[in-house]
Structures are given as structure tokens and as C-alpha cells.
Length: 330
Image (cartoon, rainbow, N blue to C red; front, side, top):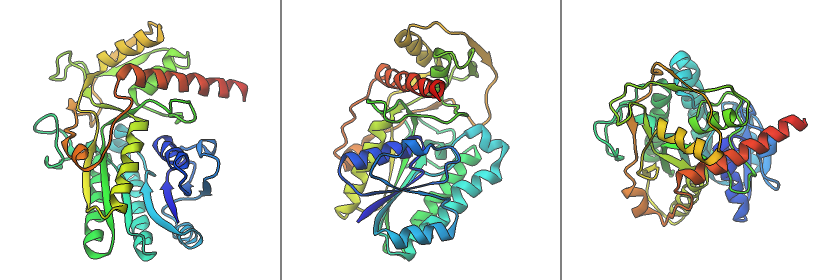
């Protein structure tokens, strides 16, 4: 039996593949390498280059391997880009997810874990935001993920399929041993971009919006280490293997940091006092997103190990330096 990890050559997916490999699981990775890197796929994993929207690829994967669970990470994730290209996001995140769910149902797969997002909440009425909060996404990215959650719920009601949808808050950091990290050349995540500034790959860091209704006027986010995040997925799979019912769960620490607080932490950890420039708000950015984490802690024996912003930053910077060395040696 094997687990299928879509997008397993990307940032979060490659960490998930590492977690499974570290635990002796048989792993199959499908990735079209549009943003992922094949070298991030761990040794021992079966790699298939292909698109999850391609029925022939899905048919081959499900026929060739004895897939017992799907962990779905493939998709597009940049909020402002989704505002500019909504149809592209509905294609990548919704239409192609529908093809994957259909293939899983057709081949009798009974466990499905979906990489969702706190963007489904839009601008929440209260913070911390609980899973029961209204779903009112303000970007096509959030809406595309919300639609996939709905498809999963409907498919699970009609077929012997059980699922967990994990709503991520702000994922950051890298593998502690720097085996993987965020490698997209067009990344917009604050800590990733700051790491490129610290290592001299960018001249400055832009802050988008200083007039939000927050203590210092910049956006507040709940940053979760990528390794803690994928371990939440590991527990989700054990939960489903043990007969657990469908679940929708927040993945965060329940603690928010403003953009300026994160910048100060990065400067302190790196020892680099880089230039910061201020610009207007970006489309689709709520002022504050912090997770209510009671439910995930009730359902899973999940004990975060990297719940410290300085450690998240340290691991991210270590990875950025390794990535830069690799580029320079190429």
C-alpha cells in the first residue's frame, strides 16, 4: 500500500513526502514541476511527472500503485495573482481537484487529506477564527479552495470516502536539516522574501499596507512551521486510518505576529539591517488571521515542536543560504 502526495516536489508537499519517508511509508509523488523541483522529492519515493488534471496520468498512477490514501497539495497559492487570474486559479485549484477526487473514488480510495487555507474565511468577524466561522472568501484563491472543500464533502456523502481538510494559516520555515524548503522563484511569502533580501538576492523588502486596524497598522498572521504542519497531516492520516469521521481543521498556533514584528525578528536572527519600503495594501489581504486551535488538539495527539518565530526564521534562513549556494554552484 502507498500514499499519494500531489505537488510533492513543491514546498509543503516535499516536506510531507519527507515525513512519510522518515516513517517508512511507501510514497508516490505526482508533480508537473511547474513550480516544484524534482530534487526535493526524497530518495525512495516513486516520482511521476504529470498533471493531476490529466486523466491519463491519474489512471496510470492509480492503476500502477496500490494507493490507500491521497494527500493533495498541488495547486496555485498566491492571493494577489488569483485576483489577476481568477480563471487560472479555478482551473488549477478546483477543476483539477475535481478530477483527482473522481479518480480516487473510481479506484476505491477511502482516505483523502486536502491542503486548504484560512483564506476561505475572508475577513473573519472575530479572531481567533474557529472552523465554524462563516466562509466568505475575498479572493479567487480562497474561493477555489472553498469549492474543493464542498466537493469533498459531497463526494464523501455519496461514496465510501472520508476526508480531512486542513486550513492552513501562514506556513513558513524549512526542514531542520535543510533537506527541503521554499524554492519557488516567484514566492511572495514574507519570511521567504526577507530571506532573499538577507542573502543579497533582493535589494529591499516591501511592506504592503500600514493602515490596517491592528496595533502597528500592518497585517497580523499566525505563522506555523512547515514541519509541524506536515506532522498535523500525518496525524490526520492516522485518524482516518483509525476510522475517524470527516473533519475540517485549522492549522496554526493561535498566536499572531504583525509584519513589522516578523521583520524585526528576521533582522535580529540574521544580524542584517536591510531596507524596508512601504507600499499600499494588496488586493485580498485581510487585516488579521489567527487560528482557533482547540479542535485539532482535541482530535489529534499533535504536539508542535517548532512553535517559536525565531526558530522558524532560523530554519528559513539556513535553507535560503543553502539554496543560494546551490544556485551559485550550478
